[in-house]
Length: 268
Image (tube, rainbow, N blue to C red; front, side):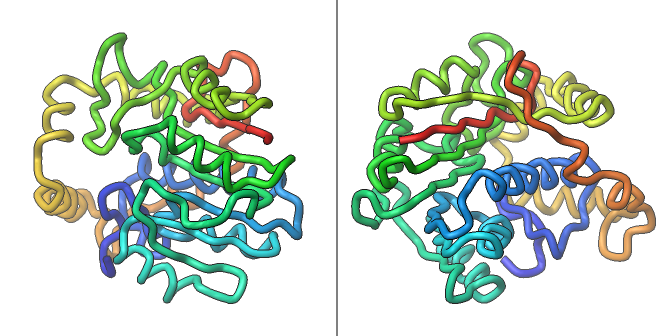
């Protein structure tokens, strides 16, 4: 895991050396954590399901009583434990199905960019509902299917089991949660246009490449492209690192179909 900014879909921010669109994706994720920090009471005990690179879990730990990050990847958990672990920021592996905590343990649960990877999404929602205390909050993000896929098209991302329209996500969550709001995370005009333009160029050839080419070969090709473009180690042009920030994103509650990511706020 060391020495690579991306493993599968994981981003290691301190080693960030890739292009503008990948950086904007990282900022979009950080924006979601910033939103969560504002929504969760300070003394809360929080569970993050699918903590990935751990940077968001660490951000949360600075503002809440305790946070536990779960992930199925043992190497990821080893890395983030060494990097971010503390008394109130704990990481642990799980099997991806059974959340290893008793019912009504947590004040809040987060799961960002995870549900699209899960085979049994109904069970995923049920398990999260179970470990939440009454009145607890569940925050979830996932890519917005509306602008990414044509009707009937399978996800081009090889790791995604499915993607969701806003009403599909709301219907799923209402199987367990009595109070569900599905909002959206949107970029400013420039960021939004960059993302929409990227999606416009997702051809069937690109989809085939993303789904079928082995991950190790994709990483080799990405590193080769970075050297050609000057974006590898010691890259010569990183103005975008200073140009963009989480202030380039905001939450929308209406016209959610125009969002980049769906943002669900659920209360038990």
